Length: 311
Ligand code: ADP
Ligand code: MG
Picture (cartoon, rainbow, N blue to C red):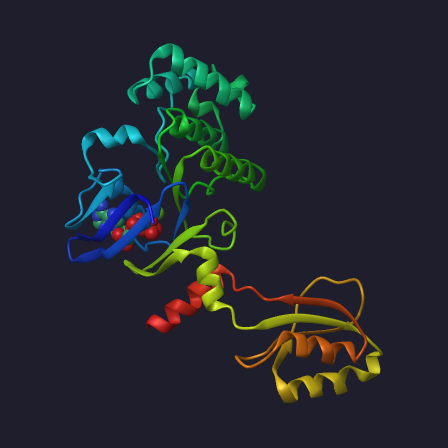
């Protein structure tokens, strides 16, 4: 695997408190890497170490095979959790100033700012002060500032907090596009359900420890447990009999999925030996099968299961 960023057994103490306990991650080039875990897990601490804002007590971080150095700061675009723009400075001035700090000349900065302001349809804010913008609007400016110098590594700390769903989606799409154009992305979130379609790799952090990481579909395959949501249109008077027959062979529970009919709806756990074709045949003998879908574990389910197993 070709990793852009590697953190190797990184530990960090604050007084007696261990904020990171030997955490390692390897972020593949061109991936979107989700750093997931509840509040206080240690995600921001790791991100601050990668950005050389704090030093690890133990462990090392490399970017493109080189130990982190000052000059790497220009290779990274970082959107901190505590957004940091100058409140009384005008948006346009500020964007150009910050882009120049990242090494762009003024003409290039103007060109790229124009591109992004048009793309995000925020041109009208150019002469406003940050303090005149809403939190979500200021966050869009911060996003532009983060990506404008075209860094090879983008790091977003809780990028979706503070955005309404429409803007959160817009930023999600921009992140996907930046990845498609060659950037590598790390982002953190404590809301696992909302972003799993965005990342291709994840690391789950819990109480300062990494408890799981890897390619998301590989992890999901490991955690799938041969469970199907099924729906069968049939005479309602025969529901109980069918359910009893299924219970004799499988673990059966109620299913919650949207449907128009009032069919028999169940979640059926086949177990290791179970065969989905056999189940389908059985269902066909009851009536018209309207629903037959494998239940793929969500990252949230996997997180909860992994935490319980690690106790
Ligand atoms: P996350 O981003 O996953 O929510 P953080 O990395 O911000 O978590 O924090 C992890 C833990 O470390 C928290 O309990 C937090 O209070 C503590 N912590 C973070 N930074 C400091 C600091 N500078 N001094 C003392 N404790 C800190
Ligand atoms: Mg945080």
